[in-house]
Image (tube, rainbow, N blue to C red):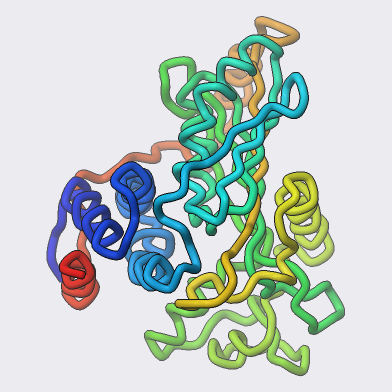
Amino acid sequence: MAVQTISQIHAATKQALIAHGAGDWQADEVAKATAHSEAHGNVICGLQYVESYCLQLASGRVDGRVMPEISQPRAAALLSDAKCGFAQPAFAAALPRAVALTRETGIAMLAVAQSHTCTSLGYFTEQIAQAGLIGIGFTNASPVVAAPGGKTRVIGTNPIAMSVPDGEEGLAMHFDFSTSAVALGKIAMAKYDGRPIPEGWALDSEGHPTTNPEAALKGSIVSAGGYRGWGLGLMAELMAAAMTGSVNSLDVAGLKLPDGPPHRLGQMYLLMDTGSFTDRFGARFARLAQAVAEDEGARLPGQNRKAADSVDVPDALWDKIMGLGRG
């Protein structure tokens, strides 16, 4: 295990992506997201994804040079067509226009369509909040979740994220969670480490609860909170796939498979101006935050969240990233 700075992680990721065919701007946007995940302890969405990015660039499963196409089909609706490229540049290209539109209209929708997996959804809603707006995001993924009572994979882990501005280009509240009981990556990590998973995370291929990560990966993940999480997962599916014209989770092969059809996933972001109806948003939030602060041991989602300047990276993983950078 060695300590690597976040700037080193950014540079190494960008170099690896460029070495496998990505354009400079596209690689930089993906590298920013990778470094951000590592800085916030989200290792599942960080360096562990870089090898799959590179393999998919080489196979053509993702286009690392395509430029997104932005259109405005309705007065308060923007569409960024990623054209089977990365989600990060598709979002970055449309965000300034979406922010300006929200300040004019009070609320706007920003859809990213036909994209590679966005990986960490909260990375995007955080940027919306840093611009002074509430950001809510939805996305879908390859199918791993069965309906309660069933055993057939129908939707992905389908995360939902929300970021609330603090008025100082920071976050007053922030959450990013899968609507499944757990992210798929945590089960994959348990398999890699040779340890069992908690009961209640997954079912085997016959629909029986299992603590065996290998059986879980062949079966399905359960929804968080049963029917409650299932409903939220379906909402994310409709917002991300149906609203953007992207594909259903059912039609996406494993996100890390090196070749095959492009992901063609979607993301939907709602941007809202806190002052559209009242000037009391800040006071109402402060009232809520104070009540939580007075309850010992309680906290708001994202409270005290800080980015690290450097992180520990397994030697084998870092060596692989450096090797990818050499092509």
